[in-house]
Structures are given as C-alpha cells and as structure tokens.
Amino acid sequence: MVDFVPQHCAPRRLLHVRPGQVQRFPADPTGRLAELDAVLVLFTATFPPRLPLTTPLLDGFGPSDWTLSPGDYEALDRALAEIAAEYHTVDNRREGADADPTVQLLRQLLGAVLLRLARLPHPDPAASATAGGEVFRAFRYELERSFAATRSVQRYAIRIGYAPRTLTRACQAATGRTAKQLIDARVALEAQRLLVHTDLPVAAIGRTLGFSEPTNFGKFLVRETGHTPGGFRAHQR
Image (cartoon, rainbow, N blue to C red; front, side, top):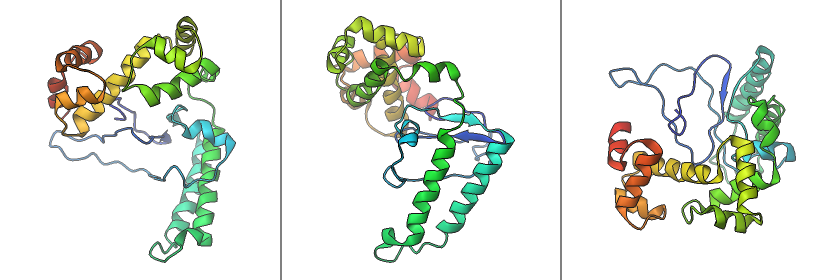
C-alpha cells in the first residue's frame, strides 16, 4: 500500500514512492511480512544529476506506477544491476566520499535510469494529456505548500493569479474533481498519514491541519473517509 492505496505486486511492476508518502507491505494472517522479491533503489533528492527531462518525474506529480514491457524490464534490470555493483565498491567512510569518481559515476548511472523512466509511455494517457495545464500545475504546487493553512478555493485562485472558476475548470479537466474536492482530499491524506504513522493526539493533528476545534476535524474526516480520527487510527493499526 502506498498512501493507503493497494498496489498490485507482480513481475515487471515498477512503483515510484516519493518523499512524504507512506508505504506498507502485505502480511499474512499471523502478521508476518509476505515474501516479496524486488529491487529497491533509495536516493536523496539532491543526489541525481539535474536533468530537465526527469524534472516532471521527480517533482511529485508524475506517474507513480508502471507495468513494464519485457524489453523495458530487461534494460532497467541491467541498469540497476550496474548501479548495485558500483555501489558496493564505494568507501562511504572515507572523507570526501562525494568527490570519489565512483560516487560521480553512481550519480550518472542513476540519472540514466531516471531518463529511462521519463521516456516510458504514461500509464494513463488521458491524465498525461491534461496534467500539463498551466493553471492546474500551478495549483498543485501551491496546494502542497498551503494545504495546512487554507482550504479556500478563492485564496488558492488569488495566490496563483486566476479566477476561482478558471481554477475549478482546470481541476475538473485534469482530474474530474473540483478544486475544493482536491483540497479536501489532500488535507484528508495528510490527516491519515499523521494518524497512522505518528503518536500525535487527535486534537494536535487537527490543529496542525488548520482546524480550530477537534469536533470540526472529526466531522471533516468522517465526511472524507467514513471514519472518525480515532476509528481510522485503530482500524489501520
């Protein structure tokens, strides 16, 4: 599960889990983790070389899952094997490790992998065709910055320089949902993350997300998820 959404695990399946997202691996009825065979590549945001073609992939809004063709899978598998081989030769204990030629090579190899992903066909052609709209793109960035501060469509429209109706039309064209629905969904997602993956009191989570009263936060979450904050926490844990 990535952000509480089940993901199908199968051969040639590729998932891109971004910073801030939460993940959970399947377990059997006894609580033991399921047997999964996968290659996991973890890297910081500053490690790959800056490449314009990979920016949409890494900005948090690009596609997050693919089922690779046999040819794409074999090419990616070879590229990841080369990264693994080079990685095991790096002496991370040595001072100035970032200047190590092998570290520089790892940067370039990772950049090549990201370029391979960037040229893959978009798994949802309809979303690909509309997601680049200037209004919707600006709204997504502003929503990530401000979802805990405001849930007002009008304020978002003012901040990005468009009329509220223009913003709502852009959101509906890109996702089928209104701007208000997208704002509330983003706040609800953050609430779910904090409820399950932190021990913060419910009232503190509500305040963090801009709710002045715990009861208002509770009503909001029931409307968005069908669960009270405490019920959602208990169910997911």
